[in-house]
Length: 277
Ligand SMILES: N[C@H](CCC[C@H](N)C(=O)O)C(=O)O
Image (cartoon, rainbow, N blue to C red; front, side, top):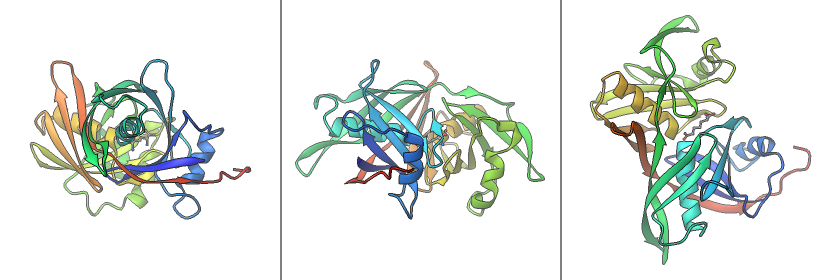
């Protein structure tokens, strides 16, 4: 199976061009390729395929093989892949990607790299955020009291505003937030936010199905929406994550949130998928 390894501020996935390849059991392949010791190493698997309603389609699978509805860092990389690999005409500076959370429109700038034009900075219309909790809602996790803001941007997020986030042992506490009864049966992506000022927040994330990742585009979008809703920030927020920074902007007229960030191709390869996955 030919693949392309790409990352959006450190949130790395294995991408497969399903215009050319067929992946019979994406959940099993996601678990196999994501393994950082016995596979390629990634936060999951993303399939880029044909669409009847957009320039292409994105299907995203977490490290544990569970299917995600939407992936912010992933859809930027899909946009870059589609442009760089000629899935759309070279004079385009925007394209559409079909996802389980609807068709997303991406605008991008193009740079010349090694004599080729390539998309590097991309802005995604992430649509509207939907509040899924009280503002905020109290919760007890492992005997400790917290409060969270529940936000859906197609996929579910629970946003916790903390005094500090660097000392959090997400490897220990993350599963308790993901598996808390309040968020079953779907589980939830959990963001821990430290406010810097009215235009900057810092974020760490424990992702449903992937654990702590170095960035989460939908999580950054949900967190900015929560911070704006709570009155903590202005309508444009820089979100600093472990792997880099994203810019989230709320357009009050449309109610849509726009996420801007980079997308990088790391390497290409070919891997034999075992029969008995
Ligand atoms: N890393 C992704 C989020 C994937 C969400 C996935 N963990 C789920 O909802 O199951 C992002 O950049 O938005």
